[in-house]
Length: 281
Image (tube, rainbow, N blue to C red; front, side, top):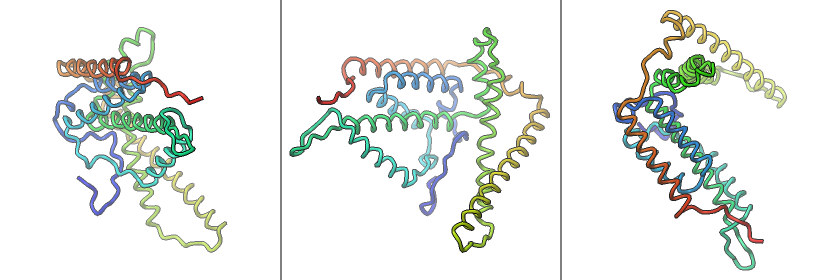
C-alpha cells in the first residue's frame, strides 16, 4: 500500500482500516477511555519512562491490529526542517546534563526537553490514529452516550453531545474530500498570469475568496443532504440508540492498560525516574 512513484501519502483519519483483529473487536468506549487514561498519565507524569511504555503499547497494538505501513502519511520535508530548527534553538537553553568543550560549557537540558515533548506529541498522535484506524465512526456516538450516562443526573445533555460528535465525525472526511476536489478543479482551471505584482496579488486573493465561497456552498449542500438522510432514517436519536457496552475482551484490555500504566508510573517515581534538570549556577 505504499505510494507509487514516490508520491506523498495523504493523512487517512476517521476511516477504519479493514480487518477483524482483537483491536477492531474492542468496544469503542474502551479505546476512548484508554486514550483518556494515558493522556491523563502523560499530562501529570510526562517522563521518558511513561512515554516509552506508551510508545511500546502503541506499536504492540498496531501490530495486533495489523495496521499496514501504507496508512502512515508521508512527513513533508519542511516538517523535518522545523523539528531540526526547534532542536537547535532548544539547545541554546542549556541546562544539565552539561559537558565542557574547551573553554565552553554546553548544556543539553533544553534539547532533551524538546526531544521529550516531541516524542510525547508523536505518541499521542499515534494513539489518536490507532483509534481512528480501528474504530467504526458509527460506534463512537453510542459509546459516548453510554460513558456519559451517569452525567445525566446533573442534567447534562449527553445525548446531544453524542449526536454532535457523530455528525462531526461523519461530515469531516466527506468535507475533506470535497475540499480536495475543489482545490484540484481550481488548479486545473486555465489562468492568465498578470504582469505586475499587484495584479498577481489581486488574482491570488480573488482565487482564495472564490475557493472559500465554493467550499461554504458545498458544505451547506452536504449538510442539507445529510439532514434529509437523517430525517428519512428516523432522526438523530438513532445515532446513540444502538446497544453499546463493554464485553469480556474489553475487561482484559482494561487489565492490560492498568498493568502498563501502573508499571510505568512505579518505575518513573522510583527506579528510573529523573528529576527536572537544573542549571549550573
